[in-house]
Length: 375
Image (cartoon, rainbow, N blue to C red):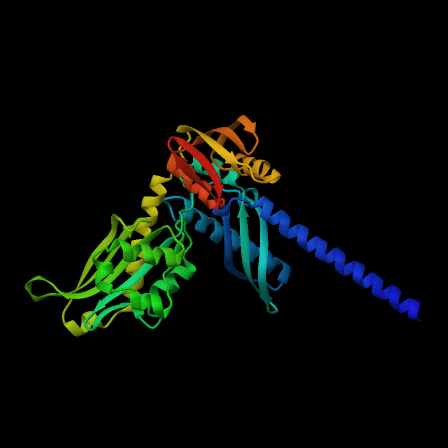
């Protein structure tokens, strides 16, 4: 009996081990297949009804594919909806579908899906339909909402309407721009003055950027004010600053008129959300246009690769070879603790630097040379 029990336990353990191995292999394969984050669309909610649950599930997946492809269009191109004239085989464009959660009744299936799109097939479609596209993620950008109200400047306050709307919006925002809502402890909050932020004080802006671990900051101001001819107005603006706290550009500016001071200070969340959506849309479109995939533009650059461990050289070569815009990589030399490569890629230096950063590396310029450094 003891032998029989242990034998059963042994087989149970073997089955569990095989299950864990299989689960690990599926996860690893998924990550390998969808190595380009820009072509991965997650958490698509879709549902369908049918008396046959298998058919209901199939229909929900089919609807999910269309939703996911629309999201992909919105993320990468200047078009946000599939045209009826498009000839699309979504099955061919998708490497795999992952079901995160599912639920069903007797005649309905509801699921949350992730879709990994095949970059080569999607790019073929973009070229065929003459759609410009970008696939480069930005470096992290801080969003700093500040409300200039009757009682003073309000910022970094979870209970503030302006801050709360931004926070909720960013939780669902899906774009090539990587935003992060600013947050701080009490000590940092007390060391920051609203007037200094509005005056574009470099040291204060650098302090916020450093605290957020980002590379740029977008100051978004909401301000009720008395305009010309006694008109009450609500001003919404967004100004972008670089890592050094220096002014880059005004992304957005808008005035909305109201009949009374009470109405201008009674914030309408729906209207503010509409303004935020518009502001981010303008920013995103500018980013896409500046980072469009340019097939005819070829750039050459030489890069030094420091070697501290044996794996540094091979890992760096693998990263560079797998970059989406890479056309050719030539090894110039390898000696001791450093190697040198020559790269040929599509796009501008700026685009290339952004891609490198997205892969966890950065390029440090020393005189006229570039050094690859792991972040």
